[in-house]
Length: 613
Image (tube, rainbow, N blue to C red; front, side, top):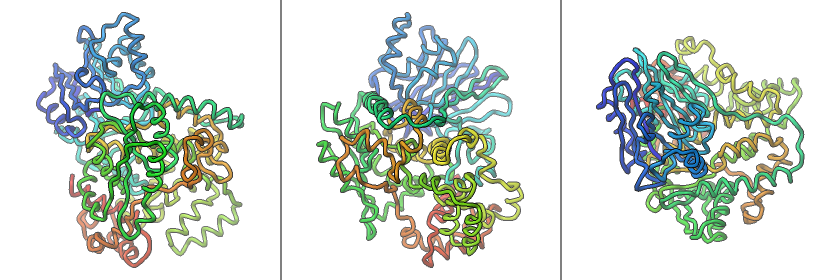
């Protein structure tokens, strides 16, 4: 696992010192060493977190005659098979690592090399002879890649925005649509960033730059199911051996390895399979909570039950109320507004685990693929239009809970999805009140429906539940949970792997009809059935519980003074984006007992980002 960055200027010599400065911002992603290739119009650099072939595999990596050079962030889980095939084809590989396989795959397949990879990756490859730059990102966007075009031609890229910010051509202007996206979703999804002209390479895409020709291409996708279920047994028989293979592959490492264990179904399955193939007790890590409401949030008793069953080497870290003090520093790691408070426990457990392991497996992705979230049941509750109209009238008093309920029962799918409180931190009418008149004019009636029309079209013929899962996988997963895990784990120099998001698992889950995943109100039914032997009864029968952080308590406690003065912060009062009076009303309502925690957390995080720019 690494951080990478670089500059390509087709008609100019790259400033090597600038590439080094960019690379220096990524030290936390790779504290074990660095590497640089600077020659003429190309500069590539990386920071290394050594996981496989620790003594070798320094980067940049070259082919035999150094006509191809690579910097690489991630892990290739099928590299042993790829390596064997390449050796059989006559290639000479000098390392025992996974990154070198990409170089020789490119020799064999050109830009199609990426279609042969199974892993988590973002890489940059330079073809000296063809003067061609290839940037690529893994199938689900587990590893990040940001880029921007240069005014005189060329591209600057990096694992994190902070590397690009070092470049003097980096635009500092804020993208107004990105602001609207953030206050709708609490994050900024691909391909936008908070800065105009700077983009995230979307998941499953590659960027190919050759002279004046720069093109971005999708190399992989999945399809929603179109036929009836063939029986749960059929899917279980495919799922069990596939996931066993996935976990076994992702346990490959030349450094200590463990797992995050929440005590939920997903992490329990991962730990159970790890225990079956591990010759030593699996190291597991859980986070607990300590304050008056702690009993509601604390999941450690469930994690301890799993740890006991599998004899793991179990460790716990406790999140206390003073963890709130971390958020200004952690928020800055994202380089743009990102308002998921679960980032705090993710950072703490990563920091704690880093003392004894360098790699952890996590359960991210299972909820989106196998219908683990409670809101997927909303799609089954369709009601006639007259009753929807009555609900709309009932919601007019402005109570957020009522508007969210109306969205659940909306007569059209798009409203149900984009206007629910779980998807939208500020719903459309609230955004209209939040933003100033001038900023609303700039946005020209922006709505998520317009922005994500392409994602909506992918599953237009599918049932509502499948469409909700599909949109979560295409928009929310990469923009929210995967960004959170990448930035918070890499902030502590630990690699997080996500076995449920092996692209083969995504393809299999996409073929499953909705009733296989959510049956009679039981979430993740196929996982419960397929892996029942791995799940203790108290875990098997446990309903889904969100990884909650009590921000409402924090906002009325340690942050009460800050919330009272929130509307006066320069990011609110002087930026021109907002109506400060509306912000003040929201803050006062929350401090008076109503629940506006998610909205205020998003506003406060915006202010923190504004101050750290």
